[in-house]
Image 1 (cartoon, rainbow, N blue to C red):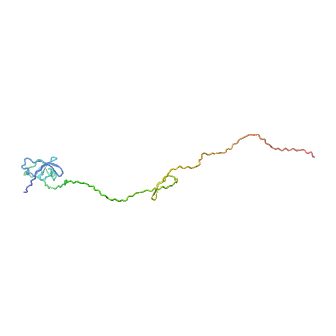
Image 2: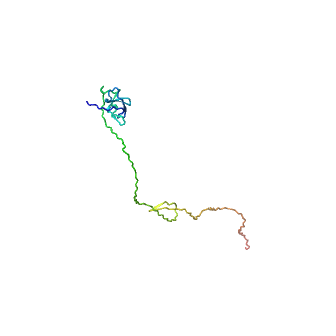
Length: 209
């Protein structure tokens, strides 16, 4: 018969794969030899108790235990565990799985110092400069209004204007005379001597017979 491997009995807090926590209950006082116990009772947060094999627990660095299975897969119990050699118990088959985690570990520190170095560099780049040549061209011409800026070839022409007073003689019509002719009949009575000739004929008796 194969000898069962002895493991130290876990105690304290234990957590399953789903993160549900439980507390390992101490073995009953009537147990003949606690070092030979192969099962422990764990009381969950909801008050339920389950039977777990003692070698199924994986101890963590902080002293707690991890159970690589779910509480629901275990057999619930109502009281304390029985001593080995009493009634046979049904134990689940447990398979240990490797759970690998990584964490950052500070292995050392470094100090970085930045040093500014100066060096001379010859830079020969062409630079452009615009020079403006302004020529004044007299015009002396009367225009009707402002003249916009215009470009002829590579020359921009800007016209300069000046208001001047212009004196000139013009005929001004001041008034008109409207003349009308009107005929008026008048009477001026006067005494005027008017002569007329009258011929008087007389018959003369002839003396001759």
